[in-house]
Image 1: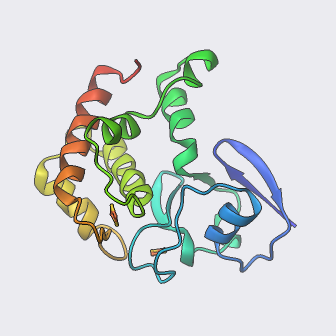
Image 2 (image 1 turned 30 degrees about the horizontal axis):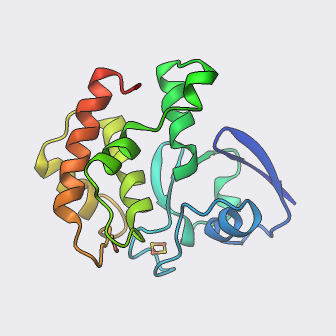
Length: 175
Ligand code: FES
Ligand code: FES
């Protein structure tokens, strides 16, 4: 038995301490945003935020996130609402600007990689309010254990979506 903090809520899980966080999120907590791609920290499909930093949940153990805050794709709206101090009623109707930008730019193709892309974008935009194209490329390719991979080739759309999200966040983001 372990207790972890996921998307602002303490959750008790039965998994052993060395269980990959990805398995706990998907199998124990039914959070299906993070995807199982490579299982080797090489693609980014499984990414989540741990204390605001993008990590690969396929190679992160349950024990490694003890006492830390885990945010999955499902938790991005509440994360944004908390950062902006939105009332609970508004928060339930509000997507994170990154998610909204992804919809407006019609970024996903098959969609399999996009969880990791949105998590990485969120990490970047919490750190750099208005990143340059070079900074966006750097974030997605060299700032983690490996580049975030998209087999469908949505990379250009991702850059445009990050720029749209940055503009939306600068305006406050709420719709
Ligand atoms: S599934 Fe975790 S990095 Fe590919
Ligand atoms: S949209 Fe298909 S793998 Fe990226």
